[in-house]
Structure formats: structure tokens, C-alpha cells
Length: 537
View 1 (cartoon, rainbow, N blue to C red):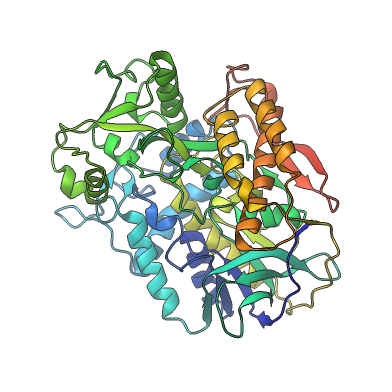
View 2: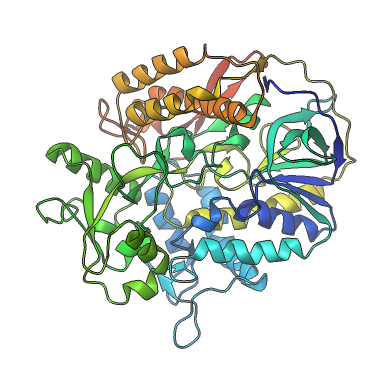
């Protein structure tokens, strides 16, 4: 399938096209340049507006005394609830420390202890202090700053901002050889054009805007995953949407991006309390407030349902040095009339991270030749059913290097695209809020057959609301619609509770579901589903 769009009016070429300007996209671009290849970096908004800069907690890696990749591996596998690809996890934890050191070589400045060592903290699911952070709670902003500076200093990386990628272009053999994109602006490259290359790397980040409340920025509409689906690539684990447990509650009717209260706050000793002042996580898990995110998010939702409360509370009043350790969070709370030094912080879960995505191998290659995916856009298998805290930035670092090396080792010329005559799709942008609200109701933290079927019925009605006027809002809405369908289909199929997929009508995990649900769209827009066995851990 393809989005309804005007024919391309201009053409550009580069050895490699990287779509996205978060940690995965920027690192991929820089790694590709180490092999002397030219790069076209396409980003939907300004180059610094992706999800990376919002990351508060940090990067997990076995950097501290007494810590080892094996221990990091064990924590990752436990959090992944039996669905991690153990080989991918091994790659992540063993190559991770060097990837962080490479990031430091590129200019990232991490917080240090008094003796000059990297300061490390702990987050949910970790049994060691292994989270490197910057600016207290501004790790993503510092990482983004350092990588952007390196990119902007390289004249062989061309950046096109305010450009929405639309669909993949293929050559006569069915391999991806470029993309169509729409540039929002004026000049020689405004409107729809085409970019041709040896390889395309999708690093468009998350899809949090599928839901009404999310920690993701407004640009996180899953454009890369939707493009890959329409190109015939396989996606996997899309039912595993991680809801961050502690997001600042601003009211029941708020929509869009919500302020995140980093897990590192609980790592430093903050408590979760209900309206009665009780620490309800005590006794529910050995790590209490520092249990894996799925455990904490579900416990919060159950507590809210039990008491009828609209939120629970995060208590950080007893923490020393809060304003120095968490300056961003402190400012965010104060801007909403909450003083964390004296007040309880109202919080509730919100959509945060997609553990699944475009299915890739250990070199980031999708099931379609010439098309790669990295970061949150990809499903490498390292996260399984639930991402371990702060493994996301690390995944972008590690697998971007592998993608660049793989592209270099498979040289070929830039190829000509053939005409795409696939059926087109475009929805009226007015239905965006309906998609988000229905997904939050029926496919949020707690799911059941009834809730999922109700949302599926909503989507069937929404599908009839077509548009004949291509525009950014319509393209984004169509992407969200296709992603919502993929999530719903997998969530209905997986009749168990595992990780961040919680079925109230199937409250237990089942060994028969130790497998990936793999989906794809054929050229006529029909969904097919297969399964990929996962080695029992």
C-alpha cells in the first residue's frame, strides 16, 4: 500500500538515507560517515525535536565497579518476561559499554562523582547502579546536543528538516532504494520529492501518539513503522506498549504529551502512595517501587480502580538534593503549581515506549532488502515483552553501529525506483482524536477481549472516513490508524498476560505464548500473521 500523495516534483541522492534525528538516527549517520559514505538525514520537525531530548533517566551499561554485562543481561531478560532474544541481549550488554565510551568521545558529558568516575544510579528492574546520566535528569538533552554538534560539523551529512517521510521506493528487484517525502517549506525542495540511496535506515522513534496521553512529543506518530508496513516489511511485538508508571497527572481530559517524572526519582528513594498515604507497592514485588515498569504501572491502575481515584501519589519530600539532582522535573512540577519538596506529586501511567516495531536481524536489516530500522522503530528482540529501564538509548547506540558496518560491507550503486502502483490510503485528519481516545479506552494498560473488540469496531467505522486531500495531518492520522490496527490485532491474538501486555480475561502467562506475533501487510492491504518461536529462558 501507499499513502495518497502527489507525484514527486524533485529528486535528491545520497549513499544512505537516515530518517529520524534522535540518538538512533544521529548515531547511525555518524557511524555511516566513518566509512566515507554520504548521508541524507531527514527529520520531521527541527533536528532537535525528537524523543531523545526528553529522556530523563539515562543510559544503562555495565560501567561500574563489580557490575558485569552478564548481570545486565540477567536483569534485561527478567524484565523482558521470557520474550527477549537472548542473542540480541548478549550483543546489547557486551557492546554497550564501548558504545557509551564512543558517545563520550563524540562529546557527551555525563555527571561525575567527586573522584571523577561516571556517576551511576539505579532504576526499576536493575539490581546494580548502572544508569549513566547527564545534567541530573537531562540525559537525553545532553546526548542530543553532543550528537547534533558532531553531525552539523560534517559537511557530508545533509539535513532536511520539516520533512515527513511518506513511503519507500523500490527498484525492479523489490529492494528499497529510497523514499518519498514531503518538505514543509518553500524553495527548490518544497512539497513532495524523492530521495534515492543505497540503503534507507528508519529511526523515526516511537508511536506514543496512538494514545490520548503519552510522554512522547507530538511528532511521535510511528511514521517509520507505518512506512515499513506499507513496504511489506514484518513487524513484531507491537502489542507490548510500555506505559510509564509515573507521569504527572494534569487532569482526566488532557491529551497529547504529558510531563514525565523519571524512574530515577524512585531510584533515589521516592515512594508511591495511595490517597490513604499507604505505600501500596510494598509486598507486591521484592523491589517495591523499583519493580519493572509493567509491574508498577499495573499496580497503579489496579489501585486507582480499587479506590476510584484518578491518580496516585509520588512522595519525594524526604529526598535530599532534589532540586540539584532533578532540576528539569522540579521546574516542570513547579510550573504546574506542585512543589516536590513539600507536596505529593499526582501521577498516573501514560503511553511511553513501544517495545516492538519493525522486525530486524542483528544488523538492523528488515525483511525487505535495502531497508533497515534502528532504535524504538525497530524490534531487535532485546526488550521482549517489557523494556528494562534505560536500555532504549543503549539500543540506539549499539545497533546503529551494526547497521553502518553492514551497509558498508554490502556495497552497490544507487538504483532507480520503479513506479509504485499499489492501492492508496488516506484518512480524514479529523479522526485522529477518535483513534487516540478509543485506543486509550480499549488497548491501554489493562485490556480484555471486550475492550479490544470495542476499539476494533471503532476503527472499522473510522476506516470509512477517507480523505482525498493529501496533507501532513492526514498522512500522520493514516499512519496512526494503521499502527492502531497492528497493535489491536496482536493484542487480541495474545491470550495471556505477559510484560506490558495485560489481559484481564487471561491474567496468567502461558508457555504456549513464548513466541513473537509477526504481522505484515500484502500489496492489497490484507493482514497476515505468523509466529516466531523464542528460545525458553
